[in-house]
Amino acid sequence: MPAMHYTIQWPDASHSVAYSPSLVIEDFLTPGADYPLDDFLRRVREATAIANQRVHAKFGFVCSRAGDQLVDTEARAASFAGQPGASVRIVGFAPAQS
Image 1 (cartoon, rainbow, N blue to C red):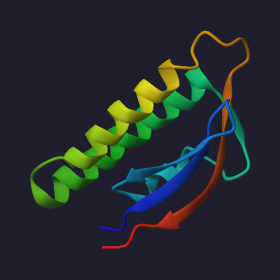
Image 2: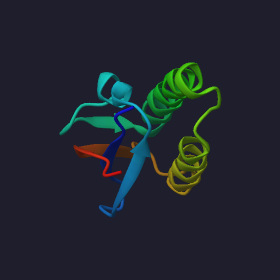
Image 3: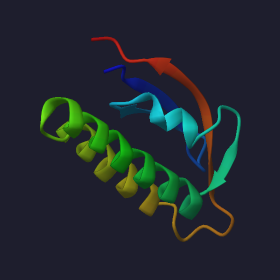
């Protein structure tokens, strides 16, 4: 199953690279687009759920790495939750190397 990395630019201009076990993340996020934190988290949660459904259908279990990534992303986003107008930018996608 093809996996994907995507680079997030946070409201403080720092970057992080996130993991998705499925290309479905490309259906929810667009490189160069800015997303308010709540919209970004909604999109990532939905994409992660679909990705995990795909992994489960193929392998019989969900991807623990995707779950860990979601926890990390939510924690990072929470650190900006009090900032009015805080948003993230999706810098780009890259195939995950096996």
